[in-house]
Image (cartoon, rainbow, N blue to C red; front, side, top):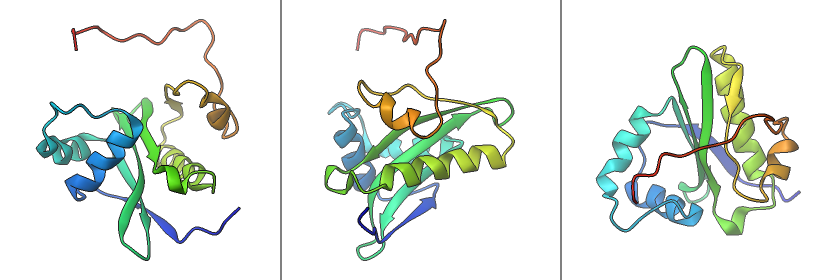
Length: 141
């Protein structure tokens, strides 16, 4: 594994443009979204982590946790810029988010994996949930 000069930072604020770029990389950003919503999104998360490249200070990845802080936690919006994938960065980020949840005594931690990404999460200790179906309310968007 190539040595990465990175660090994981848990933050409540980060330059909007860098976070928008990460959301676009994940395919989760619509042109109709207002970048000014990034700050409240970060502040409203139970935890928001960025992977920072030490030599540039720029975010090359992110992930967040939504939770009530008592019983359940959901990891979402986990993305690493393509040029930094395959070097253990996503694993380091996911483990940091898991460690944060476990330190807060949250032991039901779930996520919905993108297609074909379940192998990555299985390698980190996640299991497929049987007898459950992920669902989304359709708003027309």
